[in-house]
Length: 141
Image: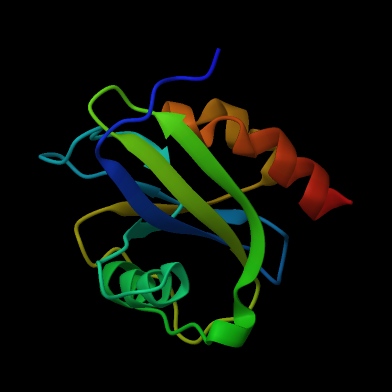
């Protein structure tokens, strides 16, 4: 039976940056003081009321990790729809293979390039876990 609709739906966009050199994907560790501190996630963030999910992701990637991504380089991949108790998470996910700049943690977060076959070894928020096998199949395919 589907979970009841929550009055508050949180729209968040996330990007899976794929290394040109070895196919590893970029993970960001949530810093101390933030919810789920210490967990690893794909970079991205909340979509503001005046933004599209794509515009929000481009903005968040620039603010959080200092890279510039063209809208043409956002490859729609999948989405997550998850009941998170006090809100409902809706998160479109994009594959990103081309960007300008070198990713760096601008918000005190640790960044790590993770080979696809090691993703299960990272503590990730529950909504991200179903993405692991999908990414492994899609990116190795």
